[in-house]
Length: 104
Image (cartoon, rainbow, N blue to C red; front, side, top):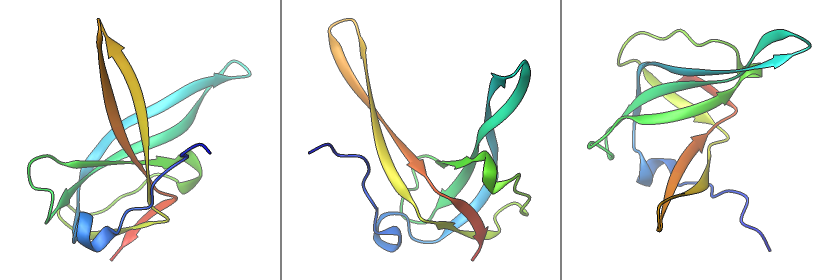
C-alpha cells in the first residue's frame, strides 16, 4: 500500500493560521501558452514558530488576497512527502497542500 498523503490535525499541528504573503507561482506551457498550475502562500502559525508555513493551492482556487496577518483556514489540508538525494545523503521535503484558503 502506498502512502499518498497525511491529513494533519490542524489545531494541534499548526493552531491558528495567519496570512503572511504570496509565495511562488508554478507555471507550465500548455499549447504554447504559459498556464498557472499552482500558487504558494506563506502563513504564520501560532504553534510552528520557527518558520513560515507554505501552503500550495491548485490554480482552480484562484488568486488569494488577504490582509497581512489576517486569520485564515485551509480547506481539505493534506501533507505529502517528496524525497531527493544530494551525494550519498537522502532528504525529505514535506509539502502542505490544500484545496482552498479562506477567511477564518
